[in-house]
Amino acid sequence: MLLQPSLHRHKVSLSSTISQSHPLPWKNSNFTLQQTVNYKKFTVITCSISQIHNYGTVDYERRPMMKWNAIYRRISLMENPELGSGSVLNQWENEGKRLTKWELCRVVKELRKYKRYQQAFEVYDWMNNRQERFGLSPSDAAIQLDLIAKVRGVSSAEDFFVRLPNTFKDRRIYGALLNAYVRNRMREKAESLIDEMRDKDYVTHALPYNVMMTLYMNINEYDKVDLMISEMNEKNIKLDIYSYNIWLSSCGLQGSADKMEQVFEQMKLDRSINPNWTTFSTMATMYIKMGKFEKAEDCLRRVESRITEGGKPNSHTWEILAQGHISERRTSEALSCLKEAFATPGSKSWKPNPANVSSFFKLCEEEADVASKEALESFLRQSGHLKDKAYALLLGMAVTGDELSKKEERTEQIDDNEENDDENGSEMLVSQLQGSL
Image (cartoon, rainbow, N blue to C red):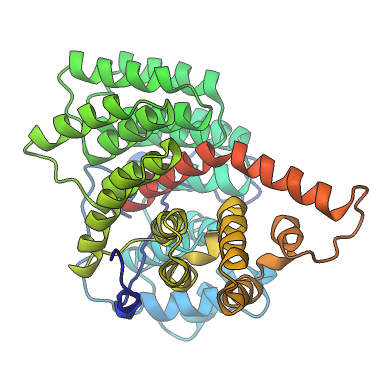
């Protein structure tokens, strides 16, 4: 039987690091950008914070942990975050402990990993006010641009981009801005920017294509995904594992099992590619949507084998496994997978699809399994999801301000979530593309 209950004994972790960018050495933290900065006087230290647009940078992550962890903890555990990260850094140096750029870049990486973008922004702002000590590289600029987009919005990121010296505007800077456009689903700006990147010969590898394909996935223009793949093939740009996984999902969401299987066969022939658990969980999701449960179960078994061999699935993958068990009416196995989904590091940024929760509750009612239903209800309560109207309605809980009957609202809510199933599937791929590189 797929995914025996003992499976949950395997310890699972997730390192979904969604990396992005931030501002440069402007002394004015209000981002008025009135100063002229002489970048030539800086000693350029390339500090790679592994991220979606930082290909080609030097990786310092193998260096000793040193003091960065203690600095990170002080910032993340601040009782009064309004004081800003700079207050922690000032206190650190007032204690006679001199900070290095590597340590600060490592702190920024960790803050971004846990989506503490404002605090990461403030660390760079602190460095920007000490230009004589911390020189900035194009890699730093890309990271800051991304953080600006997250903290202050895309328009501020565009202002930052315009004010950068042309010598800093390499593929990483363009990639950071492209990612900001895609994240905010600004299709016209993203397409215009990637055309400019083509003119500059910055679109010579899979990454920018993957980013654009995630945009088309999110706006349900799957034919554009096919066009991106065709362009890559025409230009002899090798597809990577993310390209294939997005392509598989696109084919599946178009309802073409045959086309999806053809892509998978091509993937197996590519010696540079090793299909991973994301590949099989993606295919399993698509087979479930198509009602091809035997093929879905075969894919889920492959996911299981990778987990037992030490793979580290995230909450989305555990939910997909649970969905497969629900479709096969295996209540205990489904609950075991949902339990893992809630327990996985990084699960705070994940919410189960209300349609899957509804299906599980319905199965429990049909099987008269009160204990399993109460267990999932407990997981939802502990995670704070019962404050969400979608989940509260499934349990018949009171919701303020409702004008419809509970039954009508519940039906409407579930219908909305079923319509958004496709988007949820593509969101998983976007998250893994950004977080795993």
